[in-house]
Every structure is written in C-alpha cells, then in structure tokens.
Length: 311
Image (tube, rainbow, N blue to C red):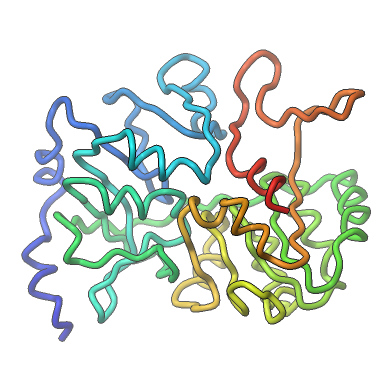
C-alpha cells in the first residue's frame, strides 16, 4: 500500500465536482497537453503559439494569439498572471507521491506551482517522465480519474525533396553534436539521414519520433554531452503509442520548462550545439519568415529564435 493512498482518495472527486470549482470570472489555465479538451467556445481563449489545432480559431477570432519567446513565457506568467485554476492531465502517482505531466511541459510545471487551485486528470496511459515534469500530491487540490487513449500525433510521410535536403544538412552535423530539431516533415526526414552518425545528444524544445528512433538505434546516447550527460533534454514531445511507452519510466528522458530548455544561455553551454529548423519563406536578402503565411498567422515564435541565438 502506498503511504499516499489515503491522501489520494481524499482528493479524488467526480468531473462534475471539479467543474463546480471553476467559477465565472476565474482566470483558468487548461494545459494544451495530450488529451486536453477544446474549450474555446466557453472561455476567452489565449495562446502563445499557433499550431494546426488553434490556427483556424485564431483566424476567426475565437482565440487570441500572444507572441512571445518561449523561454520568456514562464517569467511573463509569474509576473503578470493571477491564475485561479489550472487543469492538467497527468500520469498515475508513483510510490513517492509524484505524478508526471508526461511528454508535455512548456510552462505547465511553472503554472502548476503558481495557481490557487490545481485540478489533475489522472490517465493511466500518460507516461511517467522525469526532470521537472513532476508534481507532488501535496501540491494538488483535486484529482479526477479518466483513462482514455492518448491522441497520437504521428509525423507526415516525408517527400523525396525532404530526404534530399536532409542528406545535405546531415553532412554539416558532426559526430557528438547536441541536436535540436524543429517540427515538420523535414526535421523527421533529417533524423533518418543521421543514422550513420555517432554519439549524438539531445537538447531540444520538441522531441519527435525520429529522435526516439535514433535513441533506440544507439545513434543518440548523450554520452559526450557536457551538460546533462547521458540525458535527453526536452520540453515538449509528440508521437504515438510506441514513443510514449518507450519514454514511460525511462530515466534517460528529462522534461524541463521552457524557461530552462529554451534559454539561449543554457543552450549555448552545450558543446557542438546544432539547431535545425524549418522556415516558410526566405527572401533574396536572406531574411527568414517562419510565422506568417498568405495573410494570416500560421505559426508562432516558439523556441526557434531561442535556439538560433543559443547555438
């Protein structure tokens, strides 16, 4: 029997009772993690980043986009927001009384420590990930159990051009490099082009399935990293069941808030740091656009510029 079982049962409530704790006028943070609901029709919604799931809502005005460097968001939250309620999906509790936010952190761990009421949804399918992605039961206000399949966000198939570009980029990545890959078909294609490399490490905003494949094959092991030796450092991750099962309880994966992972000063400490990102447009002067397309907000600043500066 876990010594925290009694406290767990005391905080366990129904979804209806949890919803009753949210009052009109409250400032709420609903973590956009795996399994998060779309509640834009009942709240004034704001986002720091525009993705496929929020792009149309931003376009029609249901969600307001707030541009910001990703590493600065936790600081902005701490200095400007008074959050009444935060809601997040977590893994089951371990024997030490800790839950994990799983593959997704960003600024969630910071928000969880600031809010007045923290409601967690325990999903048995959520992997337990280490680093600063854990929250102790003593810091949780209410617990709701809801085990459902986690959404699988699988990379799109790479096209032949992605592989051509990936092979060219791979030639510029030295052995023992610490890599960061952005989102999209090109970064995943590049991952497949790195299979001939040795002793790579990871310090990345977004952990993608292509990176996990390289870890399983021993290409990425982090043994020569001068910061977090042997650890795969990230702030967000996506993939499918295979990825989540591989991460679950695997102490080589460490998830930290964006204030740490995307801090250019921290990034710069990594020897042979190599940041690889995709952009939407580049002009004849070499100016790059990664956020705006066809007259609308397509993406966001995210951590791309943080890694460009840090690397």
